[in-house]
Length: 291
Image (cartoon, rainbow, N blue to C red):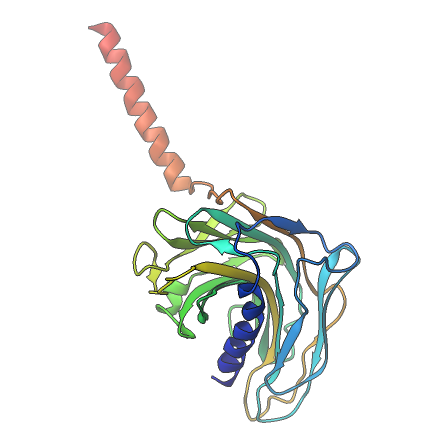
């Protein structure tokens, strides 16, 4: 709970910067070749129980997440890093998408905790409302990476863990968030070599998704987007390990904003159904020719 409250406070502060920018359609990209461009705000951090060191910065062609947490017993320790895009804001009345390449190869063998890197999208009228999609390494879960997303309203996760959506994947890939103006739904995606796969659908207007929230985006409704990363040791009587993230362990690349929504690749069952319909149509066509 302490971590959630501090994350919400951090999101509120950073998206407050975005809210002062001129309203426009999301547009732009970043390859993190050497240093951050002027479209980004300053990186901010929040400590849960303390970082020994932390750095989220561009260099060597990546946005590198390098950190070491403390090793105090009986307390959660670590924290969250956040980088907001402040060049413009995302429209509530038009379609758009944001994508990010991610890599998470944290060695999860010793500490009890988690390391995430990914995207976060917030309601600029109320930054307690947000959707995030991250590539996660966690010792408390299955022994694989997860890509995970969920919708939060007033800082609380909406829906059960199943509705917040998770799927096993690899250590490299691309994640995305897409917004549909027609139904006011935010969709999250991942692509690990086979094309975009739908992860979750989250209605911001109370309907349309697998989990739905009412974000009350009145007035001048808009979204803010950012990149988040964390390194958290779980609380416990023997939680005296620390997390160490070295250069090249966890990073992001190829951030891009577009007015084109993401389109998922159909599932194999969908292809089978389409093939079945085509086959029936072919049979009917042959019968008509014989008449």
